[in-house]
Length: 436
Image (cartoon, rainbow, N blue to C red; front, side, top):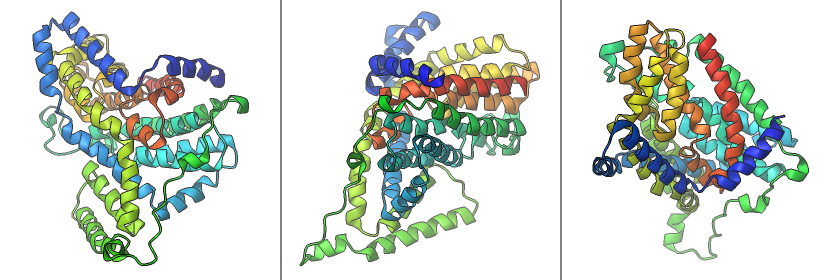
């Protein structure tokens, strides 16, 4: 049944979903038109909002580019490639390949979303080298694991409200992760997705004569050029493991001190970890720089598209469009249904504001007073927003860019499969938020 459903969905996306850059331009125009029609925002004011907000994600864009680059450096190092190859060897058939990639991605994304994006893509490529399976579905399976991130250890919204001094502390206090990430109903959602997402991907597996395969030789990473018979001093430095250890070991020592002193695992720390583990694992500057070149090439979409998403976020927030949308869902909610409608509203807002922290800043001033007035479970309402943010990432190519850059695909190649996951995962998450 799902295989049949995925066929028209894939054909539809392949035919009508444009390049991710065109997608963000269309979203910009849609957000601008909605702001003018529903909020009465004038054209001049709209252009000012858009332009003023255009560079607001500059720091975040650099962080995301480094997630891709440092993750690629680490994952393409010889020791990690050997480990991934060994795990990929467990995939003895097309079906087990799809399930294995999905599970690895789910686990990785639950631990840390940046780690999950990179490891999922690298592992999908490794499996594709060993098993003849539809490459589009394989990469879509790796991306589908990302749906779990906001219910995991790196979820930005639950971690924000668990941090003393957060911007809504005067309203709700500090809510520990035991009431959000580790709440029984949230763990039930996570468990349900660990079962449903791999099964759905497996059931979408095309017939063998319908598969889109890729030549394994196209997936092989370039090897460093062999050292000359009589290397120059510069070449000896470029291939010296000593220099890499002299800088890599202090980097890992800093990480150890950071965690021993109670430091948190954030995006900068993840990038630092990936980079210095990569330095150690590559063992030479020449090998590391070759991997760096491959990682940077894959990050081109991030560089050009993130500023446009920052402009969209500015329009949504400053025009009041995101607030109006949230208020409408609140108006039809009760204490019991508010977590569910928070989930739905956040899913819609996420298409235009694809940032968990940024989305919470927009929706918190609406959702929290509503939860208090209705007597709803605040922690559950908060996680409704968090799950909504994660849910429609299956439709929004913003977060797929790093993974697609590594895999060498376009959004249209995987989004047909992701739309099927969107529908089923949405039903699973929504049902638990509504009834449990």
